[in-house]
Length: 149
Image (cartoon, rainbow, N blue to C red; front, side, top):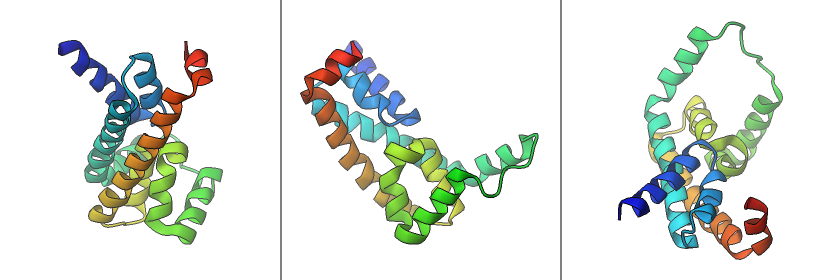
């Protein structure tokens, strides 16, 4: 029981930092794909909730301790603004797992002043969809499993 809980925690922690880390960790720990998908989505949503409530504080802290001023028109900023203008929170949420990471996506949504309920709704839908898809692919495609080992 204790080892199973540690496996679940490992998948969630990996997904908190980089979403694709969760499904890969689930394959390595030999969890089934639904368990991997659930805990990958859970890990991402834990990051989203944490950073949505602490988003302004994190942004202020980074700005305070930054040695050089941030680039106003970086490649990532331009991409984020383009996605925001075209698709809004739905685009940001669905591109958070593969592109923005569970750390940068919620901070981006907070920077665009999206209401928390919308952030939670769209990010959770995105986490579940991506979690199911990536976990299924990671568990069913044998060449991925061989590549990981």
